[in-house]
Length: 333
Length: 192
Image (tube, rainbow over all chains, first blue to last red; front, side, top):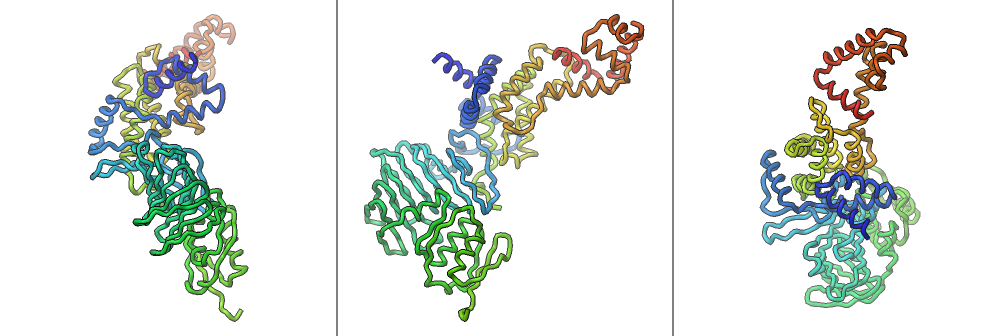
């Protein structure tokens, strides 16, 4: 359409700095038409990054004036252009940011050795985010987790490195398997949905398959998974068990569900969810107790602890900013 | 307070990325206001320099906002001190239209004063600072465009008095504001 082309070229002119009065007028008119146009406009501006050599030259000039070193390798943020850095205040009401690469800052690292530039998405404790990868795969990243990948290479190879927990909705592509590399094993999938939990400080790591098919590549073994089953690695022992898909993946919908997990693990998960430090004064006290339940994220940590206390005799005390201490009640009660 | 992934990344990367993303259109904006290619360059470069040298924390919180405000203020200050007006470039209505668009991208919903408004406000303050009758005459003459005779009739004074008031007003301006004021006056009249 003629009108669309004119709009395109005005937008180009604006972004590249050669807009004239009529371009400004045309863009203003377009934005005034409906609010959706404004969002689209902002998106396009955020994504823009100049590839013009003249701009590079000016940047170098500026570097000399400021006494800044020239980087040996090109540090560029991904095609998203600039993005404001998010300094998030960690809080109990964790923000669940939706949208393309929103909520956390995406950067590129540069490795001096092999000139590769990784993109890393990182959530601090108490935060979750949702990310869309270059192939349109959606990843929900849970609290205290990190996802690393080579964005430039994604059209050739779909590989991500995960620490922490993430739920994947893989974009279908039978020509290219999608690999999730964790510290101990790799989950290989083509077009499926699954949850991987691989925190460094949990004694076990597990992958739950919701739909489709994945293969777990562990050492020299290839273990296929069927839907509604999960792969568990405890130390060096592997097992495949029936999974409770809802329990294990509802965190992405802001629900907190757990099924027959030991007390210490429950506490660790609460710590992550609510961004608090909980000290258990007698760690062995509830070793043989298992817990199941569901909480919505709107409930406070204290409400959750109160519920747990109904069946487990302990006292808790807030001993500092975001620090809680749990003490087992004496047995003669 | 822990920050998302910021430990591994440098301010310079943020800065460079911001430059590559926004320099061209900031330069275009400055050039539209000032008319000079090289001066526009200076305006925008010095804005980036200020961001780096004294407002570095802004890199982590809407740097584009601060950047645009610095560029806009640099340009405004520059034209305030100019004596010669190049009509095409300093047409404030035109400036306002550009500002409206840039503001959507750079400022968002934050408060922002158009250059035109700021100058209008300055003008009003100046005129309000005049002695009562003097100000009345001056407004009728320069803002409402009445002829000296018309003013005299309206206020029931002599034409000579009208002339005296206007001369007095201009004298006050010159003393207080130097050459600047002529520019502002002309601009303001262009607006009307």
